[in-house]
Figure 1 (cartoon, helix red, strand yellow):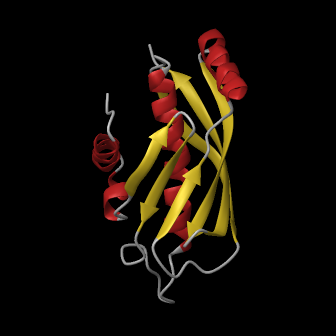
Figure 2 (figure 1 turned 90 degrees about the vertical axis):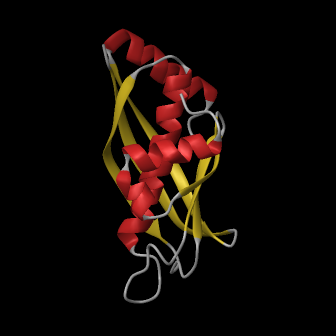
Length: 150
């Protein structure tokens, strides 16, 4: 299982190819959350700002990454998919940006793990904020479903 940030980044690039195309980098990944960065150049639109789909994809990936590695650390072998998501774009993103997902609180994560063990699947809502130079430029909320694999 990947442990260093570079190993986690390589895992994402190998298993989720859009992460490589968007030049996503892993800045932090741990119990308390995940932070990913992406450059404007690889995600630019015709207005010289980040393409909305790229911003959404990096946010989805940040929350998925937290869920994936948190469940793996809890010895839960799961398939994780996004069920629905919502983005709120507050300001144009006209530079390299980051996405911070704080993950679930300890009690909420514990409940998800117990639900997975009991029913073989669980749902969780994760949020993230998109930042440009430490200013919040967008907010993300996504519902994820984890299914326990045999």
